[in-house]
Image (cartoon, rainbow, N blue to C red):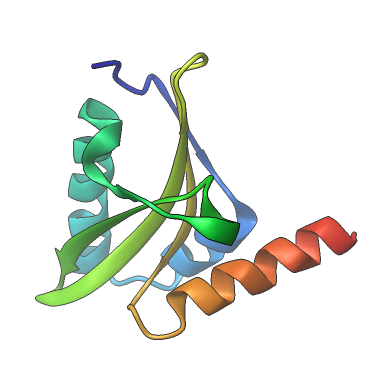
Length: 102
């Protein structure tokens, strides 16, 4: 199993993380470290989101979803989205459309 050596963040992800409280950031850091050790922890999505993996973890005793992709060749983990289950996949698809339109 290859470990991630680099971690990238999309601008959307950075904005979301900026709004987190310190205890939430601590939970997120633990989740990211776990993903760096084993990038296959998340569930691979199908269809439009085939490039995406989603890792579910507890943040402040609530379920949070972390969307990411992993490039095995470059050992790079790209953090793409963070949020609750509500509208998570819809928001990812919307941001993808915005990127492809520009």
